[in-house]
Image 1 (cartoon, rainbow, N blue to C red):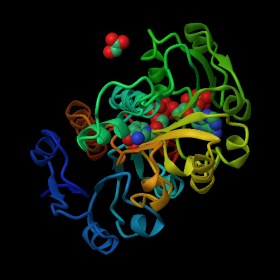
Image 2: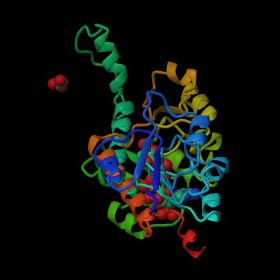
Image 3: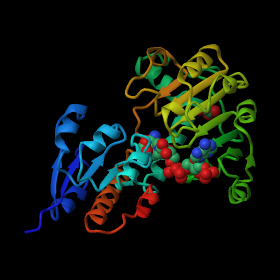
Length: 325
Ligand code: NAP
Ligand code: GLV
Ligand code: GLV
């Protein structure tokens, strides 16, 4: 008798993806109102073959060691900084992510934040709801104009490029920084390659699109904010890419005119002072949160798991070195 492979999912996922997996495997889902605790995670995965994780689940050595039969960790996210990939690789475990299907949803949210901060949309909405709109005023809620502005993109990958594409029509002067120079980006968007310090000196807006790695941790800090003159920072990448304490100081004293944030340094904690500031728009990490995208992500995760459990190499492998093991 062949054993049916076991999958554990740390949260219910939208769409049909889990039903597809249930038709072939034994699937257990953490089906509670609250996020799974570490203790529960460790106790539920002892005999599983596949783990479907969220970006908020820390998949470290201890977790990996608790699941000796594990063949795949399929993250329900494109970022996988929550997983100790090196250790998983050493154990011969596939790690997969969900690239591409969330690119448009995330880049459009970066634009939503940019416009919301530049044109003070949330602040003005609150003012209106509070019944304080007493008539048109020449100087009511003056903001920063987006059309014709200079925008810097840090990380010209899938989402960074998509963000630039969506700016067509706003007459943006683009500059970008990425690990490698991209002649096609320079040509397509007439974009200048620029180091991040100069970018903070010259730009009206900077939008972050790098993954969180040891290299990008705190890549934006005091020396950047010291050069900024009324810049607006947009972060839909990962909180720890920015030194959050220094960002708050710069928002307080005006070196930064504002910030649009979907991510924070110690999620889900959002610093109290940030929550009292009028020049920020704060979102609860919803970059990929559209019905369409979240369903596609779930299907992608299911296909990766199905491949790994049927002896195939999953499509969205982030640790190809594992194949050499
Ligand atoms: P991607 O296609 O891999 O793009 C990331 C880009 O960052 C790459 O092009 C890479 O540049 C660049 N990069 C990496 N390390 C760098 C460094 N040290 N310095 C400068 N550039 C560096 O990934 P993506 O699909 O666009 O996603 C990007 C990130 O967005 C994810 O990792 C995730 O953390 C975040 N994200 C957030 C949300 C949300 O809900 N807010 C949703 C989706 C994704 P090169 O090409 O030059 O090597
Ligand atoms: C979301 O933050 C992701 O990395 O998919
Ligand atoms: C504003 O509503 C205008 O007509 O200029």
